[in-house]
Image: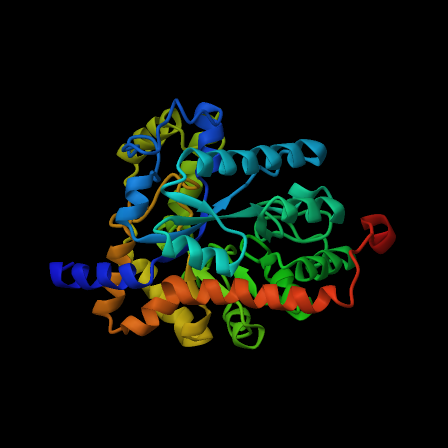
Length: 396
């Protein structure tokens, strides 16, 4: 990439910084050091063990980050709820540790205020409906603690919604699943449709009165992986007002990486490790496998191919970015960590994207969606009380 394009990209990001939809630093800190911010100083260079630290966020032009308060779906019931609370506690501790660099944000206005103060707006998103243990009261508690989106499933189904990577069971959303969406609308919590089955996407779009998001998903027409978004769903985003935030995970964006990743995941399991693990020890196993089986390499151009297609189908007002840093073992070559966003913006400039359109992609669309969801919630709360429905009542 030419220095001129990179300079232009940095200027775009100075004016309209990135709102990234998904970063798994909280789980990485849990699995590596038990959340100990003294053991890993995020104010220093952590590239040997993490994709994320404060200086690289600044270098990447990040103005707002949705920190994922993800817990694995192997955790269930109260264990999932407790682990989610621990994740939330970590994000709050992180912001408290670096008040000159980070600022908690709960609203679109908060995002603008943090940006004006020169801090990175820190929002939270829960990744997987198992985090609420089929309890709408728990959903409300997460919202009160600051969670502003919930991904309806992770890699496994929940009793009320089908995942993209599990066997169909609910046929999309059950009646209780629809009630979850309605209650999220009433709260002003964004409905996140990454990870869910296409049937769940379509049901949620039918039910939701507020804009939805895909916090880290790309285009299925470009890479036929079930984690990606079909064109008919992308085409519904203008009417809904939502956004699709393109991810950087190679196995979701590069067709050649899909089969390779399946083999690499099997190798991890053979070594007694979870396939999503990317601790330093896990990465040694990955690198040894890669020496014997060269990995297909994605680049910023691969991500740009998805964004070009998503723009053609959904329109510029319905796109965003969700890198999934620290939630994946592998990333594109020139998007190696959170400092890499200028390389993607430079590639899009090279393809003729205007600075006005790029400012929507990076900042404007995500802020607008949260604002619009807040407006819907304010309207719904005037006429709709908190739901006390249960899974047993609605689904039998």
